[in-house]
Length: 171
Ligand SMILES: *[C@@H]1O[C@H](CO)[C@@H](O)[C@H](O)[C@H]1NC(C)=O
Ligand SMILES: *[C@@H]1O[C@H](CO)[C@@H](O)[C@H](O)[C@H]1NC(C)=O
Image 1 (cartoon, rainbow, N blue to C red):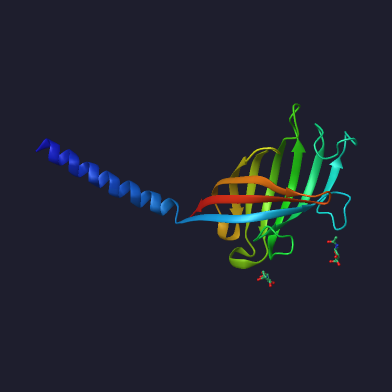
Image 2 (cartoon, rainbow, N blue to C red):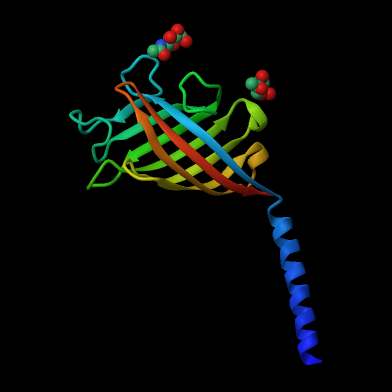
């Protein structure tokens, strides 16, 4: 009898906890995007090196700070439809390599999420998959939480393209 009661309370516990999880996070979304940076100094640049302590290696010298307003794309081709911008700060903060602390907003200006934004914070590692935190959002993305994986997939002397996979939940 005792075993039956505890089995039933276990089932009840499972039902209650799944109901609570359902209440806390109604939406679970995976966004697959690309971002295009037109490098500082090139035509229509989407980035500027605002603190340049190392003119010999402007992109990644320790202490350098870059401000970006890069283009969020649906597909990897620079000519593919833009759905927003990636705006904010890139601070080169690793003495051993071109890795950065980033504080960036994904600002959607077309598509299903037009008018909403996601706040992304974390570490960008040039030669690896970067794993950054989604720490909030605006519009449809109020109280969003999750993570974003990104990686450089193409570069020329004037353009850089990264793939970005964003996994979020929000109420
Ligand atoms: C820069 O922007 C102008 C105006 O939108 C455009 O005509 C030109 O093709 C762009 N240049 C490059 C290199 O993207
Ligand atoms: C995005 O939303 C703004 C403001 O509501 C609107 O003016 C604009 O046309 C929308 N853009 C697209 C591509 O839907």
